Length: 111
Image 1 (spheres, rainbow, N blue to C red):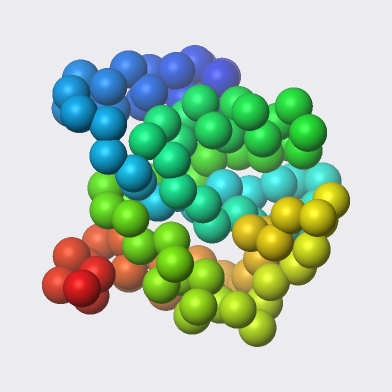
Image 2: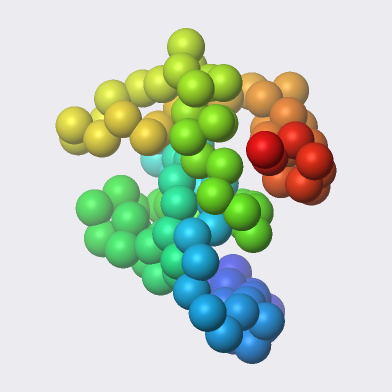
């Protein structure tokens, strides 16, 4: 099964779970830039598809069901990188990714 098929299946399952469109925070990775994007969207799968038009090689890694984008941007502000006048790209290491996964999985940290 290709990454495209997996993402298509995940998108379908996500749509079944969420009838109302609320903003979700997502983590994407660009293999060309070797940078991560922390963003928010009511449809992260579609957003990553849009990103691939301008930034080829962007893949969706994680989705958080809550809008914690601003908190993550503040937490990692020292790791922001400007790409084509877009400031939501970050130079992150594995420890940073672990922190993001922890934030994504712990609802109590969101407020």
